[in-house]
Image (cartoon, rainbow, N blue to C red):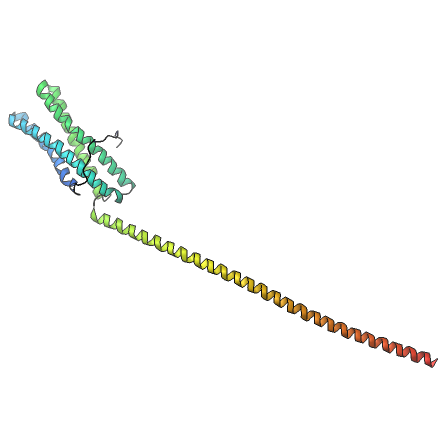
Length: 250
């Protein structure tokens, strides 16, 4: 409902008990109907006592609407944290229309007083129209209040218990998630240290093995060279002997 935002410049006391709003709302719905019925009866009977009763009921009606607003504000503060986005929007709209109704209840009363002095048909017509408008808006407001309870779970104890339980479960899941993340971080750090140690061990082993292989190869090459040198010396010696024998035979 796109109504201009207005407020009631009165501080609502925090000591108002919870869940009194439904009681006040029942009176707020019934009283305008009672006034309308009395006015219809007074059109026929034209009794002064009924007119006085209507004025008294109008004063009571203003008080009841003020009480409905105050108790609704208290219950709304309690219900707000447990409502979703649509529920919060509906609650704000319900509150705003409630403020309008508090002011609108004064309009039929003022028009009623005006009709006493003017005593014209149009003044009584305006009063009747204003009263019917207040009754229609009151029924509309009651319907929206019922939707807050039955569609969005406002001020329903079981709904609040479920919401609190869901919040507790979410907190538990979040804490467990954080604990698992810390454990995973520790495991990753341990795995990194193990990989680093294994890499250093492999490097050292490889270097040691390479050194052993190189030294063994060098020794093997040296032995082969020595054998070749011995063979070469033997061959040279044999050739020298043959040359001497050849020379001596000549």
